[in-house]
Length: 424
Image (cartoon, rainbow, N blue to C red; front, side, top):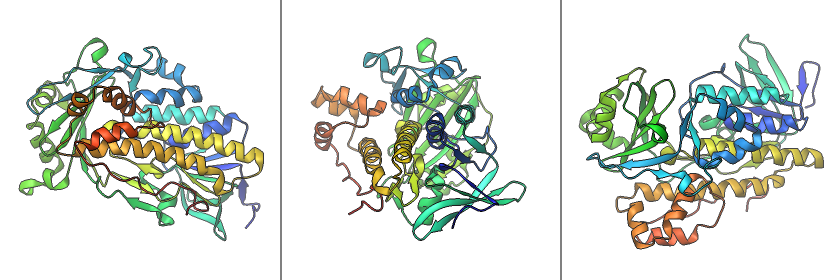
C-alpha cells in the first residue's frame, strides 16, 4: 500500500496528544521532521494525574518547557508526607534536602487540562501538524508492518496517512497494544480509585502549601490530597475493590465518604471545603505491553506501561518515554533504519524504570512493610528510597531490594519491553 492522492505522507505519525505523544512529537518537530499528531478530543480536556515528581525536571528541561512552567499558575511542590489513620503526620520529605533547590527539588502540582494543553501547543510551535477531534480506528498494514493509519475526522471525513513509524501514545486505552494482543495484566496491582475535587479544603502554608499528602486507611488503602491552584484540591481513595465495596456499598460517593471517616487528617482537611465536582472511578490500574515496538510501530507512555499511581510516576515516565522515543526515531530517520531492533535500548531503559518503581509499589502494599522499618534497619536505605520515589529510576537499586526483602517479598522482573523482532 502506498500513498495516493487522498492520503498524506509524513516522517512520523503520533496517535494521542497527551504528555507522551506531545513530547515525542515536539522532539521530532524541532528537528524539522514532518510529524502528524492525531488526538481524539479537543484540548483542553480533563485528565487525572496532577502531581509531578522531581525527576520530571529532566524531560521538561529537554523539551524547553521549564520557563513556561515557572511562569505558570501551577502550585509549586517541594515535599511529600504520609499520614496514619489516626491523623499522625510524618515530617515532610523536602526534596531540597537531597537535590538542587533551583532545579530538581522544586516541582509542580498541575491541572492536567492546562498542562496537557500547554504540551500540545508546544508541539505545534515546533512545527507539528496537530489534528484534534480526529480518531484512528485502523492501523494500515503491509504484511506485519504498520505503514500508517486511517483517520476519521469529527465531520465524518476519512483519510489515510502514511509514515515509516507510527507511535501509539493513546494512554491506558493502549490502542495498538490491545489490537495486537500485547496488553498484559500485572499479577497483583489491580486497585480501584474513586476521586473528586474540593474547593476551600485546608492546606499548608508557604513551601508546604503544595505538598502532596498520602493518607492511609485500613487494609493498605490510601488517599491522595493534592493542592492545585484556584483553591482546588484533588483528593481520591485507592484500595482493593472488596474493601471499598464491603457491606454491599456500591455508589462511589458513599464509598468515598465512608473512607473519609477512616483517616482523621483527611476528615479535618476536607471539613473546611466543599466538593465541587462529580465522583470519578477507575479500576485495573497496572498493565504492561509485552513489547515496546514492532515493525513500523512504537509504544510510549501509559500505552507502554501503566503503574499504580501511589507514587505519581505516570507523567514523568510518559515525558521520559516521549523524549527518548523522539530522539531514537530522529536517529533512525537519519540512518534510514527504523527497524524494531533500533528500539532495543529504548525498551530496556523504560522497562528498567518501570520495574524499579513497580518494586516500591509492591512493597508499599505489603501489610508487613513500612519505609520507616527499612530505614531503621539500614539507615543508608533512606537516600535510595528518596531517589527512587523521586523518579531517578535508571540506576542499580539491587542493594535496596535486598534490604526490603528482609521485610516484604518483591515481584520478579516481568519479561516485557523488548521490540518484537528482538524478543527471545
